Picture 1 (cartoon, rainbow, N blue to C red):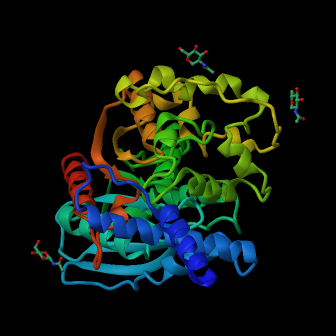
Picture 2 (picture 1 turned 180 degrees about the vertical axis):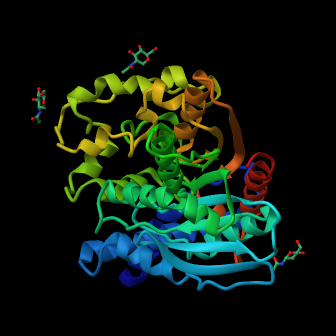
Length: 401
Ligand SMILES: *[C@@H]1O[C@H](CO)[C@@H](O)[C@H](O)[C@H]1NC(C)=O
Ligand SMILES: *[C@@H]1O[C@H](CO)[C@@H](O)[C@H](O)[C@H]1NC(C)=O
Ligand SMILES: *[C@@H]1O[C@H](CO)[C@@H](O)[C@H](O)[C@H]1NC(C)=O
């Protein structure tokens, strides 16, 4: 056989096996999920090649692809949509056109993207925010924050809290006709983490007068101190988001030190002094048996590298590390988790911790869910799963906010 053909054949087999992830049988629309997963895997493969050759960084390539999907603000018959800034933070404001006798409810939505990617301009996020404003007759605010790796921790948190504090002022709420007692902060993925961290700050900061009525966390990641929770092991090579890529992106938010991701993969990156924090994410006690399965709890190896990174133990990076006394002041909470998702257990452990201190939590676990499902709600390749999650979230919001 021609040597070149053989090489090409081998390369194809290698590539196919690289992007091939088995799809669990309970997942619906298998062929669409297969295409979306392959698209994600091929993009990350190309991004990795470009990075290794030195053409551009990994995140720059992914970001370039996502930007093709950005939308301009456009108003429709019911909603006026405007891009503007609040306290120098870019926002997209969705304001219902109809006159209202009473002040409206409001939702502040923080997008995901592992702190490096994404925007409220993303088509799926814009669609969800418009839908929320329409269905709930609510004022909705999509928030952008500065991204890693140009801006490291805690910039993203700082931008979000600055925006929320600005919005919670009497004159701003009055200007947009918002009822101060009916405000929800929501977010998906890393946006869910930012929403959780912002909510902890608002509820516990005595200087902030108006509080948040509800928080909605959609498949959030809520800690970075243990990278071997059962969901991280089970979905290591999972659909759409693998453990390696998750770690690679999150570490860009923490440091420019390129040795951190490898240490995180081995779960050997936390400093010695962090040991007392592990009780907050000890999955052998906080995770129900159904999710623990037969995984055996092994304590992470501490003090091997001694990274001097305060972010590793900061509650603004890992809201799960907040003490019970801080959690007690939190509002009613909605947490949605997906079975086939590395960060699944972060959300489930937060459910346990909040319920332990008496917070009312609605936990929706999607047995056939995958990470970032809400990104797949718009044509050409939308998933019924994305629409189902949207409807669960909106119906909870409508009843509670
Ligand atoms: C505007 O609101 C009406 C009534 O709720 C609804 O039927 C219609 O679909 C909405 N329009 C858009 C563009 O969403
Ligand atoms: C985690 O929980 C297990 C079982 O309850 C316990 O043996 C272990 O010491 C705990 N580890 C930490 C770091 O809290
Ligand atoms: C990290 O710190 C611990 C305790 O402070 C020490 O025992 C250990 O040798 C240090 N490790 C490295 C690689 O410096």
